[in-house]
Image (tube, rainbow, N blue to C red):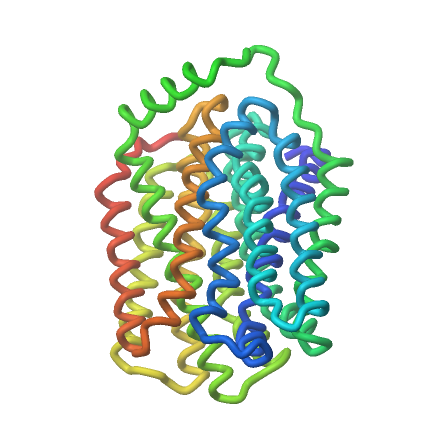
Length: 398
């Protein structure tokens, strides 16, 4: 990989890193927000869910516009919206007696901005490199940045909240500004002179044809990616609540939440560098990763609320399995789609992933029994493994 391209990739990877910080660093702060605002656990979970729900609807539009106008012309305005929405939520937290509604509005706008950011990153990596091995490596780096953001976020969120519970909202504009600067200065994707703009009707016809001929494996990747995110965010929300109940707070709590996420990050990075163009390997890594997570979640469901150390060990192993899946699914969908359709198709994939993010915390809040929740998570992982096994039939490539 060229050194210049490595710099471009670093700038691109900053986007999922910053977007993850904008969302996941609030997870360890949610119990404190609940106490200060005097709201229920379900209402608290909506601070995470609102961010994801709005993104679900706008991600496909962002993908289409990125195919039509160019990736940077969509990502940069999205980052600006994320920054402005962070300021709105932060302002409401200190200026209003009852800021909950305005915080949710800010989070909705933040999700709107995010819908133009991370989903467009995957096709941007595909545009940047000509060699498919470099594409797989680049996707692994981007997914690792995403998961590394999840590792950092509980620690950073807990540390900022020690100053005041609303400081994480104010940090979001600063994080977004970093990505805006890096993307503006470093990322220079050459235009595809052979590609001529097509009308919306022609574009939609090509997408319908794509799903008619390749819909089985595409929907398989979509569904398994959504289940991955659902399991991840539901278990993280539950872990945060358990640690709070055991009077583990502050940076110590953030550090413990980061442990399973560190496994996710390491697995994503290692698998991203290993898989290359071998689509058969991508499939079987996904199946095995989901089965590992299935076993870990089932064990926790059988044994109930274990001591903190045991709980973290099995979440660590389970998240390693989930982390192995992420770059494999990314590579399958990015490398299997033509460049002119890549933005829209990967945006559908990202939209389904956001559905998982949106459903995880509120369902974890509504399901009262620990074992019931983890049986559901185990069943979700097992279902994902079956979906991948049944739907994805790749031919091995050299």
